[in-house]
Image 1 (tube, rainbow, N blue to C red):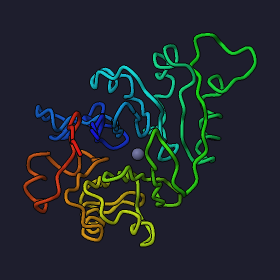
Image 2: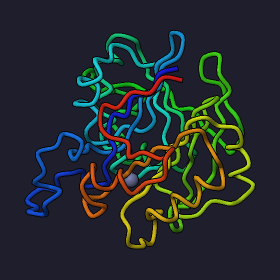
Image 3: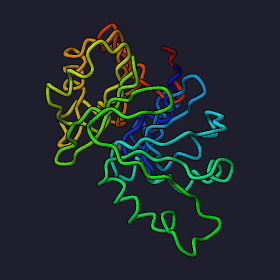
Image 4: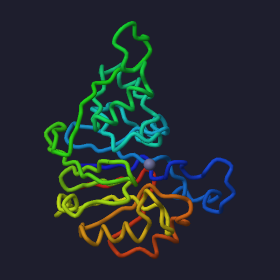
Length: 253
Ligand SMILES: [Zn+2]
């Protein structure tokens, strides 16, 4: 399995438009972060988790030529706003399967009504095949994917376990029984916004706490704000098996 971090930034991305914060002005490519998403490939399967406003650029960066589906964590714009840009895949492959909680599918249907239109649909619009997921394993290709339920303040969000790899983003709280599902995972990705507390995201110490409980071989932090600091400086402060993810990072499992 190969995982590519397509984006590792919080909702505004880094740099933030118009910001003069030193991290936003950094020339280090690792301090430039598109909105969060990962591409996961195994055998002949290619899926992405979330499809934010940087989706087009991310598909170009990853030289992605086919997409078997999009799996959504939740409906916030930084995770969904790029849905229209699945068009090149739709034109080649037909309706693109999208996997999401029924509440998320409803939100997408409202925001992208023209994509879900069944009568007199505009010929240039993309098409999707909506697939509802609940908090129980579902099949992607030859793999059982396990949803991990968490809370983004008051909003339910899904993380996902793909065999030895698990991805949690936009979580603030997670029940111990959900963490149990992560037992034995080799690589764990967890959101860590900044050092200061936040109402709907783990801060750095909360993310490290989750990693300590799960005990993966390695962990990567994502959904990062410029307020967390410079990539190279933050990495020096992290435990031995914990790393900051950065855009275009690839890991093989
Ligand atoms: Zn987000």
